[in-house]
Image (tube, rainbow, N blue to C red; front, side):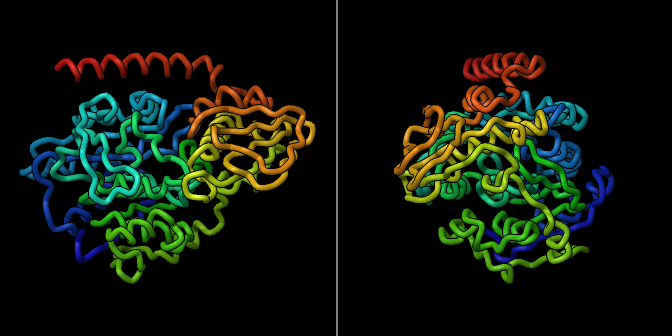
Length: 429
């Protein structure tokens, strides 16, 4: 961790390669040291769809100009872009839909799905729940790491920036472990393998709503920092949060990763935090509070069995992700949904689904009260995935299902097969 922590805020009104290149160059100059050896660039490519999700990922061209700048340093021996996208979706499909493969070809840099590559099991010294992790080879062998998040509001973790980006450091086989009421601790566990040397945040267009199908908001900013905690401290303030109210930030500080006091971060650049926070102050980020959604579905959120707190990152996060995807694909689907109720976790009280169905989502879910509903059905899983719910919620509540999309379903199948073939090749050679 650097002793002198700084964050550079630069106005960048559009994704102009020349302007972005200037800011990236300034960031390296401020860093005061050159990339050496094996360099890994990790962007946010959680999900992409050419038809309804084009604001959830880091701008490919910003990553491209960063790669160009890295190559100018003589000590760089190797350069790779790597990421592990949303669970159950082939990352290579999101690379294609977002234009990352095309960008990689233009700039002559390989783009790799961590799930298709080799990995190494590592022990964690600071992990609370993850005592070991299957660390992607590209992270484990990197001599210099550049994290490039997309600044967004998050449905259950307040913000997604440098620390939350590390969920994409996980292989899919470990992605959902502790992804429940322990998610914020999990995020900090992964920081031990994913502590970057430089953070370059795409905040030209930020996202709100459901972060994997984010709605765009023009902020006109690129943010660069020499420390992930400092980067998130400033990012939190820009999005209207006090840093101590962002739970994974507070946990990281308690584990010794650095102060989250805003006074401990030197802010540089040509625009201030207050001005940026004023711009974002009117944003209502849908799906952060399910009770505010414009829908006839009622939501009852209970506590999880592990911590006795609302299971914010488990089954309710999957419900949010499922409904967020459905509504992004066909706007108005949620508003026009049939009435009913969804329950997650251990709910103390009565549940009223009216004349509609009541869904109990997850293995531990129970209602310690009465249920008024036409029918009661349980969907098993712990935590259940958003993709699995996509096969249930549309039929129950009368919404159009992405599972019947004549374009997307064949793409998922084809890219899943490609992913398996690539994994076999890596194991063989």
